[in-house]
Image 1 (cartoon, helix red, strand yellow):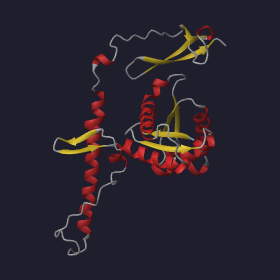
Image 2: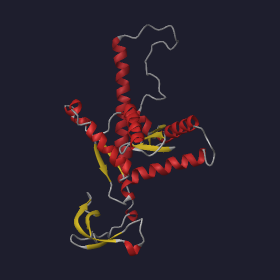
Image 3: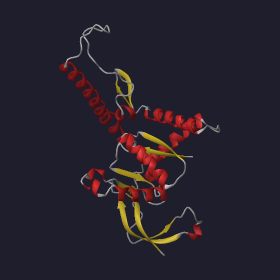
Image 4: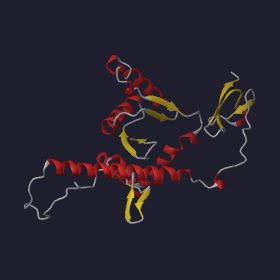
Amino acid sequence: MYILIFTCMAIRAVHIELVPDMSVSSFLQAFVRFTNANGLPSHLYSDNARTFISAAKIIDQGLITDEFKKFGSYHIKHRTIPLYSAWYGGTWERTLKTVKSCLYKTIGRGKVDYFGLLTMLSDRQRAINSRPLTYKSSNEMDCLTPTSLMDPNVGQGLMIRLDNEELGLTEPLSRIELKSTLHLREESLEKFRKMWHEDYLLSLREIPLELSDPSFDNAIKKGGIVLIKDPLKSRPFWSIGEVLELIEGKDGLVRSARVRKGN
């Protein structure tokens, strides 16, 4: 069996699927189950595995039929990282490490059947999505988690304001009272979103200067001749290439390039 992991690039939530093999058919079926549970994404990011490339072409062909042409938002854009550049996928690589760590601690070298493994993966998914990202405030000890934003109603009851706390002795809620209750739910969710942006997302920018190299220089130039590393071959058999285009990040630094090989 194989484990397929989807992770949200925005709130870092994970969705784990158990598949029998690494075929395109198995991935597509898992992708359908993912979209049934979470909806269609606008973008799909992955590495350059053949399974993902082939599946993306099938998804693209399936979503440009006449039935979906009038719904422009249903067109899923697939983006891949540069070849042999695993660091570009740092978001999902870190998620892989987290899932593996959980499995090593719970299963280790033990053997489990299909439904046992399925249940364990479900437990691990819930645990990872419940990890604290930031706290609500200094007065509240509750933490903001991916689950808080993905499914805010989990583990919570309806907030209904009653005049009499004794059950069975209250009158049915009026329409105005019910609307007030729903309004409180919306305010609570909006408060979550605000904290997510101000307390968590903005804190990601606070990276100490010593963690980055302030003297980084773009050593690769357009038209330069470079040696292309191949993880499958030893150094004497690496290819020579010419740099055709430099691809800059938002900070103006070059971390990838378009290269023409000697062959």
